[in-house]
Image (tube, rainbow, N blue to C red; front, side):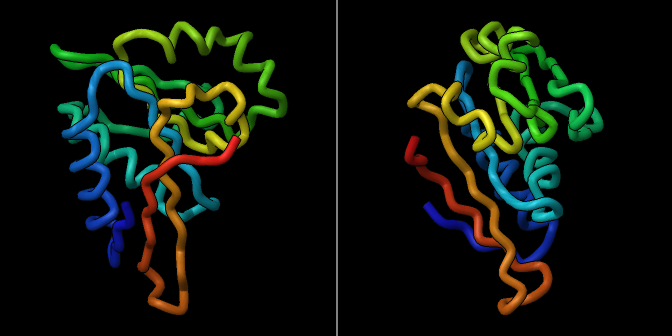
Length: 143
């Protein structure tokens, strides 16, 4: 599935729609260069899950946890992970393998830890189509 976005609000709305359809236990892997809109997408995704808190990227804490009456949302940013073994130190399996919805920014850095059922989302910028243009592709990834 490919989505096109021409503004931050459209990127957020795509995230919101995906979050609205997310189910407990699902893991979303978010890819894209710095500044491409991963956190904007994640803010919309969290809204779709029913989370009204301010969403920030957990670049230095690795994971932020959010709760609603219905579910838990774990938002990871693994940009600073140098070795996938570091994920074992934070107990990633307890986060991934339960009823929570997980979204992992920079998931390609730890792709060998991702379950085969994970949903991969790649956000790309194309300046030839406009400064705010984003192509958001949802699909699998080759391990």
